[in-house]
Amino acid sequence: MRFLDQAKVYIRSGDGGSGCLSFRREKFIEFGGPDGGDGGRGGNVYVECVTNLNTLIDFRYQQHFKAGNGRPGEGANRHGASGSDTVLRVPPGTQVFGEDNETLIADLTTPGQRALIAAGGNGGFGNAHFKSSTNRAPRRINPGQQGAELTIWLRLKLIADAGIVGLPNAGKSTFLAAVSAAKPKIADYPFTTLHPNLGVVKVGDTDFVLADIPGLIEGAHEGAGIGDRFLGHVERCRVILHLVDVTEPDVAAAYRTIRGELKAYGAGLGRKREIVALSKCDAVTPEVAAEKAAALKAVARKNPLLISGVSGSGVRDALLRLAKVIREPTRDEKPAPVAWQPEL
Image 1 (cartoon, rainbow, N blue to C red):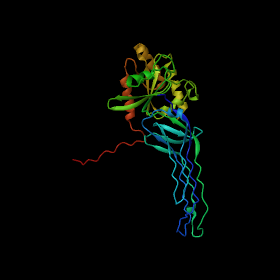
Image 2 (cartoon, helix red, strand yellow):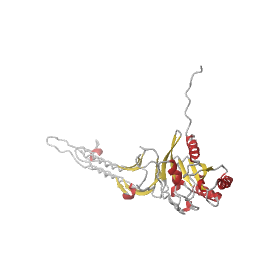
Image 3 (cartoon, rainbow, N blue to C red):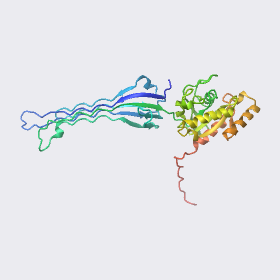
Image 4 (spheres, helix red, strand yellow):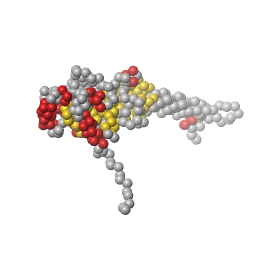
């Protein structure tokens, strides 16, 4: 299945049905009177979050969605049927934006969440609605209201506990393949990863979702390389694993490049918890790895981990560090209350 994280969709809610102009005329009934029913309400357009999706690829093949129109009212005080609703099913982490692609309409993160995007038009009143003591035979009805028509953008931001960032060919996909059952494409040329990959990692008694983000280069926040569209998938991560290739001539410059792009993108990425690691340490001698670690520590102001996705060295230490941060409660989460126990 192809990965698609952005789609443009055209939606239209249903029109309301018009009211009915009718009078009751039956044999042996002297006074009939108005009996025109009201029109039915037009269908609504909803966006619903479901569990069995992880891409917006369905909206590549269908971009137009229209709810059903309400039926007009009929005689004998029969109201028209309401139009059928239309539901757009999206994966968790999907945001709904307006036509300007900036105005946030809804943010769906939990399966079962549903947002009303376009309400259907109300049905019109039939002439029975306007009957009064002074107007016994009204000939007035209301037409149904028009439905809403608009263009929306669907933007998927993957829900992952941790994200891997780094320059192209920093060993991100190799690390993900080594710690999970994910099978990302791995090759020895830049931009091998063209879309984010997810893997479920189990370390000790902690399970978490790890996201492999495509490689970034300088100027990515302005559209250089693959661009910044994939940085949105890091927004929901609790912690970032920053991989720096130990074979880079200048590991400090490589680190500063990615940190600069995270800060320039905004959305709080520059303030997220970060674990720094030197990858591909199996490709150099321990002396060279120690020298590069010292240079990276000077700019990152923290001791980098030395890992290798191929040999597996240092991988468990990195996972334990990630799991520790993920287990920590966030500012919005309150610790569970301790049950009171009587003193013995």
